[in-house]
Length: 420
Ligand code: C2O
Ligand code: CU
Ligand code: CU
View (cartoon, rainbow, N blue to C red):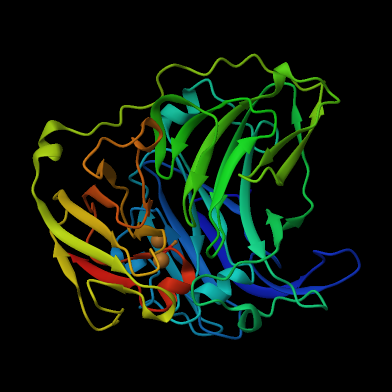
């Protein structure tokens, strides 16, 4: 947890981390050798991020999910050379949410994230501070960053060696940068803030007991009401907050978050001395999609297509000097995203837009499931699926939209919208 007195220092640096016992792995991190801190900001406050690039290569500081003026967004245009510093000052104008930050330099985003550049931003607001939900950091409210990695024989990240143009997948799972993690939780309701921070892997999260849990938040804020789920799926870049009720388990039980094949993602250890009697409220937020928004015509169409290095949006690959769309500040437009299959069937693309939280209007013409009726900045688009989004930018500037399989983004599956 990084202190925030209105100014927050964020330093990208290289270092060595003992991921495997007795071995030092060369890693990247923010304010430390690996991964990054959790920065908490409050709605309404003006905050300055003092960024500093202490790497030996150029980088940028991108605030994924933050509604920030384009000039502070940290996309590929905002390169900081080695040694450079920059102040990003903005007023927090969005509600409570779990956001994150990572680099975005053209051609090196995927590799820099892979080596460890990723941190979290918690936005808190009056609502989140007053709701009866677990909110004690590290006690009953935990950030969980899931990333898969491939190590060389001498336990290093050799990104180029393992690079897969359709997304680099690893055989080793790290949670918050930790190998073989285990989380100690109380015999109580616990809030888990899940981030899929992988370059390309999708995760299904469920409990090995088959028990259900509650989802309380999407990428950009609370759902209106807790939604009972038996599993949730997150593609790269997506977040979800869930509440797991551990009070019904015995201290010795084996409880774990597992993925679809029941392989363990995160085992829990129960501490019987920690309890709470929190009752999650029925009503958490007032997110809504208006009839007006539902009636709006489609004004932007995006067709996602391809695989490997041949990925494109509307048949084009990213060009830093080309603006693909314009939109007016404060105006809601309907973006229609279509994932066009290829002869092989195609791939799921997690579609992300910078600088905004959008609403999902429909998925293949139907209302989205309850747990997607909330603020989103990244949405999974399956082959042949058509998803309509209501998109509004509250700030001006140039923003990226792209596939969050970072290797697809790197290969050009990205465009720019200029908000005027
Ligand atoms: Cu996670 Cu272009 O962003
Ligand atoms: Cu982003
Ligand atoms: Cu993709």
